[in-house]
Length: 235
Image (tube, rainbow, N blue to C red; front, side, top):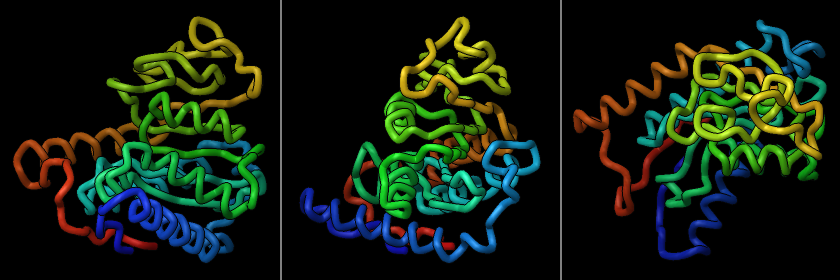
């Protein structure tokens, strides 16, 4: 899918984002039957969590190939069906809000025809930033599973505590709201929000390290406007 193109103004950016969302919804619908997990997958389980995180990693690798910071996300419905998959599109859209989670939540809401995503799980390769944490709370996501800690802007304890769900912990997220203690208070919309931390952390972290090493070495163009359109991998 062509993610780049004219950046002449808000209308152009809006059209690009609309095209991205349509493409992601179409890919999700086409893959839903094949990617359907057992019913238990919606509520968790190490095997199911790793399976969905590997799908998010596929998206993160597509972002890497497109010159975007390699973060990928997947939204899974309450019945274990794939609702949406996406990756960072900040550079392609020149939109600071086009994080993987944001694009994925929009696509999932479009697929369901509702912004309320109760019962759904969000899998993302990097601990969400405050913007994305706020969006998943607003969307009523029931379960968050993330891979690598975001030591600069993580909203689940690496920088600030916005998510109070219990669950697993990693080095950066340990104590970040286990049961709401020592971290974020219980959220009024999400008293039972579950957060699983550090799933496939090593692979998610390695992808980020490789990306920024290649950028420092000049093998990936620096971020900024004026880049030519890029071709992103499409499932």
